Amino acid sequence: MFTFKTCARIAALAATVFCSAPAWADYTYICKGVDHKSYTLWVDDAETVLTWRGREYNITVIEGCRYTWHAEPKGGEGPSFDFCTATKGYADIEYADGSSVPCRMKGRHD
Image 1: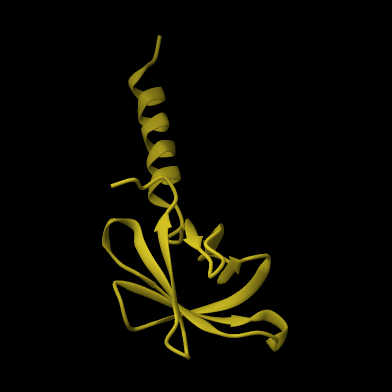
Image 2 (image 1 turned 45 degrees about the vertical axis):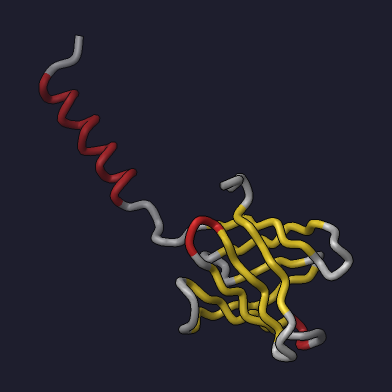
């Protein structure tokens, strides 16, 4: 049987675990490429890395949409772009030439 002291310790441990959770998150989107195929785009806030079509990009938060990351290719080769998120899981990859790629957060069907 649990004593008051045991319950207090469990509550303190649970509060420590849940309240000290990191402020970052991982995000997974499904994006339609120019070839009309679906590709996964993954954002790792902790590592400040975005992965798109097998390439890794360093990301920084910029002002723009609801939440926007600017992605620069690691190694400097390839185009950079902004990844602009909106509400209800919608997002876009926006290239400097004005072209864009639509995305939806994985698991969103509304």
